[in-house]
Image (cartoon, rainbow, N blue to C red; front, side):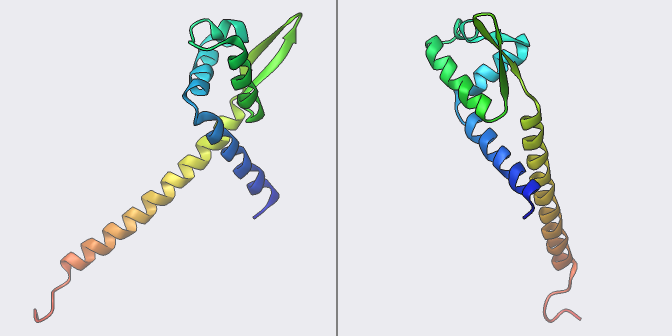
Length: 121
């Protein structure tokens, strides 16, 4: 496995682990809808504290899904789509591989169905 494939695999692992939590998915959706937001703003519609939001944003940041930039005393977060793009490409490749496998099985089953059975000449 090349270093590039290894890095892509690690990125996919980080993204999937980060997105396994429904609160982090909700935060990512809120952030994507707003374009940019602070932890305080993101915490307003959620039943969790601002500190919990900051912890979740830290996980999303570590996975490459969001980026925080300081603006005075606040940190403004934005979505970083690159890690999602890598994950989407991996999922598409996986789905295409399964589609090829299933098409092959279907061809084998159809060929077996058309073939005469034993004792049919």
